[in-house]
Length: 208
Image (cartoon, rainbow, N blue to C red; front, side, top):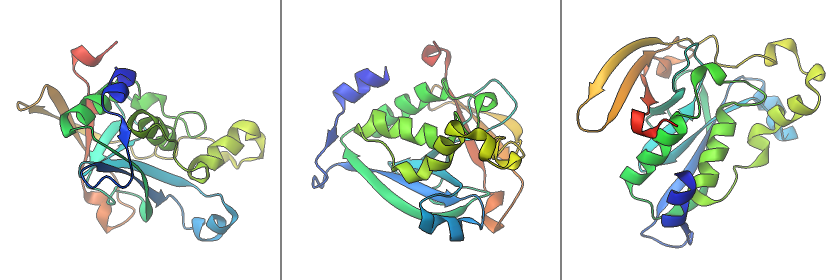
């Protein structure tokens, strides 16, 4: 489905004023990034922003979607660093929603892993499907280094970075779309951390 959508709604020229920007929002997971960033590494969270919503991927202990949506540049528990425009697309909002729902069936919260399947792997996959471009390598460089030489990483970095933020789930039915929304209230690391993350649960038609 993702490949079909990409062929129907391809990326367009960056100069096209009618096109929609696909933006990568990058966050710091630790204050140590202030010192590591200049060396081209760091511990980052990222979300993909399109049509006024930001989509991310996080861990929880259930075999259901770990894909969530938040207001752009306000992801709870992380410190916003910068935004990077990845490209522009002519894909309308409902088609983007279908694509993200499809990805939600592939990115379950209990499959999150800091090295092999983290939030930056999700945004890289989403960017490739939407624009045909990868996210900048430095955003997920630590995971690449960990996969190459895992024994060199501190033990605290060899577990999912957001595993400690297990959400409290409340099912909410959305009658306007064939989509269930689950609201999670997560522990705060900043004043913004009390905002809700809305996890996207694909319907039966999007499951494979």
